[in-house]
Length: 386
Image (cartoon, rainbow, N blue to C red; front, top):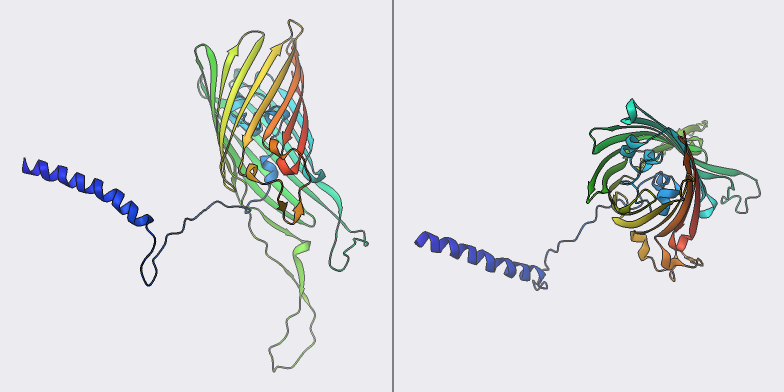
């Protein structure tokens, strides 16, 4: 009995000590020589990644949903959003997108995919290009760009995707990518892989899907090229005879840049689904390696137009990201923001029309995305299946 009381007494003392220790930890420092204070550390790699174009949604359907498409996607754009979704592709197809992005940059995406083994497996090939061309070079010696020298930026990713149904409810896939980053007269290369899984079942007779994706897990990217070459003239040590010598060429070594790795967990559920219409709601949590985490909620309504083979869809979404907290009235890097409508930062919407009959299909999709102080962008996409 005595041991029992001792045990309960020890528990009571520990319980009283915990809040006391917490209070002491929060108490102000009163020591004459000062106190050691613990500083919170943040290991988020802000501004340390390259090839950010890899994070731009590849298709207008997914872009209209704010990118919250990893669980629902079963078309050709699965090669980007979730490789596992490609295993549920019904027919071979093509999908292409184009968009004028921020500061007159151009984004283009194209992919083709083929199911085989009775539809339980699929392969896909994708091509992504982002950049601009023929921009004037301004230097200290030529501040007005009168010499007529220009430069271009071309960022390219080529991907090969394989996906397989591992059971009637679970599929998995991967996309292997080669990345080439040309910035003026320097070029960097890297390799990366996307890994994705998709779980699909039913609750109450309606489909529910869950997806988990890791994107851009790969090597670092280092630039090399003639722009990094410099003439070096080594002077002899002081006191030794000065002998004229020719300058030699040395190549500066640039920093290695990591890729923008992104972890995504997505869930979608059909609120109702009939032969003529469907309403799907979805949500997604994302954790990038170069900024703070965010989340997205979205919905898609699809309506078939009788027996015509045509269907229309409406989509909308909202994405919360750390940059949503920017104050549009404040100056950004010394420049005053003149873009209106910053309050809609993170909002996306769009729609599409499709024709599908006799094993052949055609579709057109449109998406608008609000990027806050950077303005809004528009994407259009076309898809074919046969």
